[in-house]
Image (cartoon, rainbow, N blue to C red; front, side):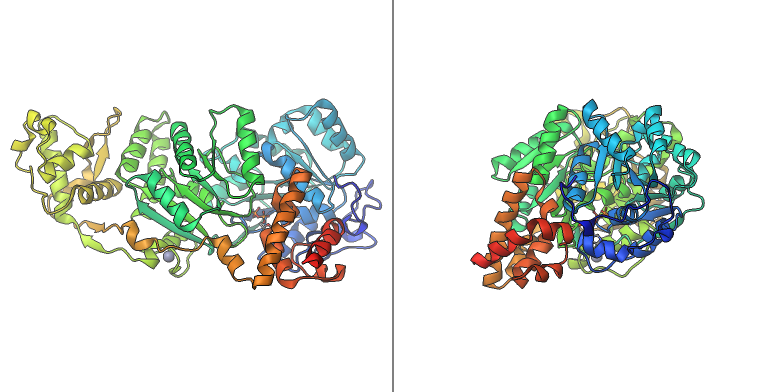
Length: 630
Ligand code: ADP
Ligand code: ZN
């Protein structure tokens, strides 16, 4: 907790030992006052004001808002205004310290309780809570399974419950946490305390499940637009993904922080090594690593500039690093929801960012196989299959990616002009004959009681007399060489797309061999047309762009740019000394505003977005001194 939080940053606590409603407080500070004095922002965004008002009145709320939309303020401000402590349920134990540090830097009084603490540490937080000295208390959901925790909360005053990452309650979702099912205890034990559930996961199904499982039937629901206009979505044909990744980073994101997602732990390790070997500082993160190493890497990613984190999807939830400039996927995500969540970690600060996915035939084969061999029942497999189909449709679309993405969440909008398909529209072509060639090859092999993978099928089509082909006599098949009109790469694209369209299936024995599905019948019979997409190769789309951060800095005048450089160095030293991530001191946008305005007095600082009373007090003099030197 901040040693001496200035009074302005401290909400009026008079009478807080007896619960009173906010409106009954003698001198009521408004939500807007708190926004300006504590957070240093001058206006609410989107639904924030209404959400805060709802919770302040004691009503429950369900908030669906994309990453970077500003969910935290929706419970932090009511927690600062309502008597008692706002209890935040969050699954992100490893990030609680940073969250508490960020609040303390604003002069708010915050603490957390989780399994990483020593007993004395825990006692100190509990005592502060009981004494009414905490504005916010972060709690891991499993703590609610401990009767002492419930008794502790009952012994103090809870102003509200915020359930962060509320989609974790969804058993079908990609982040299911059984401990979230415990949260029914909140409604049962504290029927009069408002609950606000927040998530960046937007499907109707998930929202309905949250309402049902968290008993939020009377909650007001707030659904924001899920569009992230500052993110450029790109899905590239996969040739040699690691080389493509290095090219992308060098051309467009040199020196930027980014996240690279891989499916397997092994590929996380090799990709991180590959980047480092090419001079790009990268760290690895996956569930198979020892916990301390994982935590150390996460902490470095958050604290140091320009680090690339190569990770499995175990990484990233709740990471509120604002300046992640790109998110790259080297393997196909299992669902559009997952893809949206993961890519959403780019550009929380609103500056231009890239979401890049490399996608190829092998991804489709692998995912179909994984579904087939997975343990769940038939309904589960159907659901996974439907998730994959939606993801494949997004990859294969010839129209705007953003439109397709938002449509998945039931929202609509015009073509964005800023995704790969808008920037370089791919052609679609009549691939009926090509599809028939592939399908009849598979059919002929099936008639001989044989099944083969895509590579072998392509070899037959292109008439490649490999030892395997000749020894099997497949060069005698009537389809041998009927596809000489397309290259092997083009055939792989065709096979990928007809797999994606479900005209072919993949065997479940684990070899990735192809088989016909019923959907192939009308195509083979010539009664159904197949539309295919001609892939746009990298050369056409990757116009070398300036790294986003550098581009933003380039807009500064030479004097301002020099100040920006000094401010960055100062921030880095200050953050290091305090042991917090740089953005806890100030965001880039705030530094840039300082560099541009070159304030000379403490009063000037009040107008800069992101500087509230506590930060003005703490850093104001140092900043003015630094700028005056110049
Ligand atoms: P979310 O949790 O929805 O991903 P955050 O709460 O982390 O988003 O907010 C994203 C960023 O936007 C943060 O840097 C936050 O300080 C900033 N922010 C939130 N609300 C406002 C506002 N009203 N004005 C300016 N900046 C804001
Ligand atoms: Zn678009």
